[in-house]
Amino acid sequence: MSLLVSLELRWFFEGPLPVSLDKWFSESLPGSLVSPVDKRDDIYLFQPSVEHIGIKLRDGRLEIKWRELARPYEGPHGAAGTVERWLKWSWTDSEGPGPHDVAPFGVPAGPWITIAKERRQRKYEWRRDRWIPVPASGTFEQGVIVEITALKMNGRPYSTVLVETIAPNLEAQQTLLDAAVEYLWQDFSGPMPGPESSYGYPRWLEKFGQS
Image (cartoon, rainbow, N blue to C red):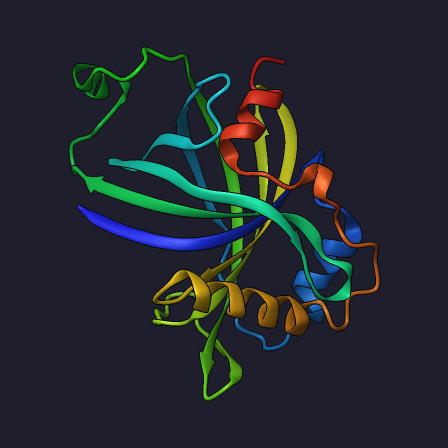
């Protein structure tokens, strides 16, 4: 079992990613280290009215995320949304698991919804009060992950942008989030995404999973 604690600022969009954000990620962000496109299917447990817990299956791994806090965010360059602190536990089984394997744990029966994803990432390490681009395979104790993902659910396209900060404690995560937004959006020319589209995957599933 592994545990990851991070602070997330995320926005969702109906349809493909807005052109301004796609261009920002591909051309404007500092550094040339962009991950290859990661294509995969994630299977989420659909839980209406539950925004603080996410359960999903992916490539033989069970992941459970619990939201420790959620609050409005207003940052540099007019960035606004909801910042959420998530704790993620992961269990890996080379022969599974699948939805039928999870049932004995007593979780709700579903339905389980398959989400097709095409994800790209950039990573920056916070080192000596500077942001340093690092390879997508790199790890760090303090840094930020910028991620854009094309989604498909029930045959319909969606997309999401994530800024995720990793640091030893909540205070450091919050400090890094402001520093990351200040750094990452300094050359962004399009309108900033707004708070109305900022939430985590559980709420996105609740809003669009039944359509």
